[in-house]
Image (cartoon, rainbow, N blue to C red; front, side, top):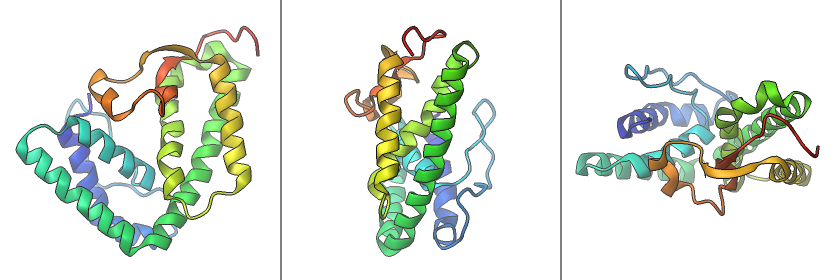
Length: 194
């Protein structure tokens, strides 16, 4: 399970370099810290992962110290978002396009070989979630990108087997089913009606 400290440390490390990241040409940047023993490696710094860490930290932070740290980090993120609005929006748009391509590639690989790819869904669905978080942050998303995402969602809805929340149950309150429907189910190992 990703702990409050895991998420808060990612946020702090990301904030330490967020301003330079926003004005750079980097889409992905090494975060520069190592996860504690037993935790997965940190993802690279992107706006999508930063926003996801904020959501996860809202659920996992419970002690007064963690909640105070979360509030401080959230205010810093909001301040940088406001100060660098254009750079923030442009970076979110670029990441949205990259994540959309990766998500499309995964769904195509799954359609071609369901039995070899269905078990990757719990990881790969991060890309769909990041698209959800990035869309309202982007400066301008081309209509074609939004239509492509809608098409991929249509395909996913047709094959997704509804079920329980796919990650740790403690995170579910941050990801309500109506909005994050793709986190409540799994892919079958065989596509019955392609």
